[in-house]
Amino acid sequence: MGFGANAKSTVGRDALRTAAIATGAESFAETAQTAIEVGQKFAIDDEYTAQQAKLELQMSAFAGAAGGLGVGGGAAIASAVPAKAQEYLDRIKSTGADISGVDIVKNGQSFFWSGKYHADINKRTTLDTKLGVLETFNPTIPKRFVDSNIVVLGNLHPSVQYKSINQLLGKNQFLILDTMNFWMDNNLEDLNKVISKVNLVSINDEEAYLLTKEKSLENCASKIIKKGPEYVIIKKGELGAELYSKDEKFSLPSFRVKAIDPTGAGDTFAGGLAAYLSKNKKIDFNSLKKGLILGTILASFTVEGLGTSCIERVVKKNILERLEIFINKNKIDLNLSI
Image 1 (cartoon, rainbow, N blue to C red):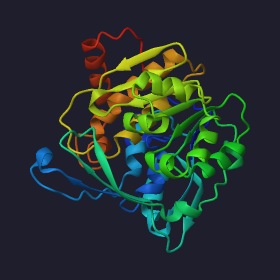
Image 2 (tube, one colour):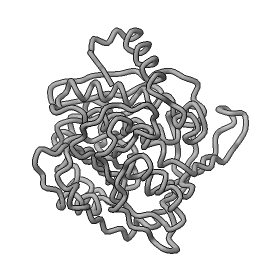
Image 3 (cartoon, helix red, strand yellow):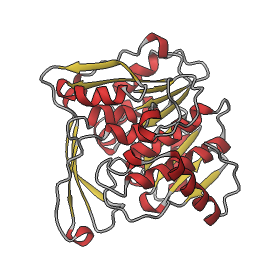
Image 4 (cartoon, helix red, strand yellow):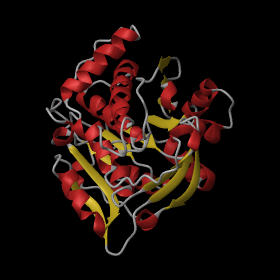
């Protein structure tokens, strides 16, 4: 789980130094869990890269960390990681995040996912999922964070997410849910209980179709909202993302770049979204639109290199430059400042 507690800071100079936030898409919490050892290996089709490769992502925690710039001094993580993750925990802690809620499991194994991206990089096939230390994780949220204004429920077993929700004070808190097809296939009843308790569900288009059995994204969003959330974000890879409420819809294209490795893009996206929301006292459809834009821009850096090699080098100037290009090109009438 990730918590942005009453954030008061502004965006800092360096994405890694100032990033301390719960990210979700796969969230900061998830990256702290999943990747710290090497969470993901991908076999990429010849049509995409002209060669097959296994990409070792040893620092995916930084995908979410870099995405969450702007919330320094007010973030915490509750998760479980193997003991070999200590080096990466130290690096996360250096961003200002509170890791006192992280369980370190001796001789444990990290969460592992492997999959195959196809010629259309928006499509992927899951080959293997191993829960590792997360299989028996029992969350304990530090007391000083139970009233956090932004809470991202990382991609964990729905029962763990539900236990976490029950530890929160529940007053003026905005809960963002990250989940995946694995839980939809194996723990749908528990997942629906969690969905009924959150404010925002953020998933990709394939997951939306799987969860709802609908044939259009509009119907998917409508069906999810009827389960309880006020908002739904449906991510479409290089085709952008869509934000829904009961009465409104906002479509946003992606920031087009040469994609090398989409690993961690969802983490970065969620980090930017959560970071922006934590800076705003009022959370409504308009502020979510702005958070969506910031998350999209940040994710565009992540996909330009393997793992976190690009997002680690991003500074505020880079973000502002892309924001200006993106807003002008798409004629977006929003006053967005970071």
